[in-house]
Image: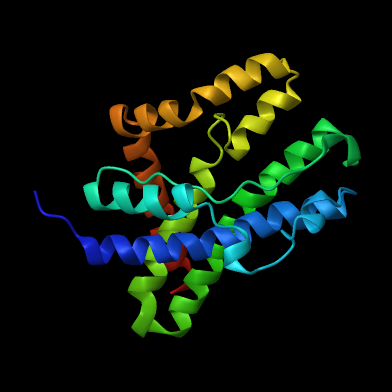
Amino acid sequence: MSFDFTGAAISVIIFWLLTTPHEFAHAWVAEKLGDDTPRLEGRVTLNPLAHVDWLGTVILPAATAIMGGGFLGWGRPVSTNPSRLRGGMRGLVIVALAGPASNVVMALLLAGVAALAPGIAHLCYQAAYLSLYLAIFNMLPVPPLDGSKFLLAARISPKAYIEIARFGFLGLIVLIFSTPVGAWMSHWSRSTALAMFRFFS
């Protein structure tokens, strides 16, 4: 088995940069909906260091990229207080959706950049693929991912949510590497990125 350390390093760097607008979007939308918690914690910023989770943003993505067969990672979650958000749990869902939405926008921007600068089209495509992968991965309803906020909005009991969160990390590993979900997300992200690039070209 051969390991692509250079490719893995590039993927991790791109992934880290992509988590920045993702987490910023959460923080910015939360503030716009009335919750100042993200600003008080220094999260309404595009500084990548403010949003890094060393395990989820660097170590795990590097390990999964080297091994191949899937990609697992996340940024440092943005703390929000639903009681301060306009709309309560509905506001929490809007905040949760802001992150994945920002990654779709980033993929479109990268496709546009590639059309203007063909010399870096391959790098832009890789970044767009990872951005879309980050978007769909975060929609999985597993804590601490964004999709888990739908469980809270559906009024799942806090005790049940905490119990699910206890096994969230293990559940994600099993889901990505022992089921077709990881391969499907990768295929969807690549094909959608390719469609975007074809549109702009």
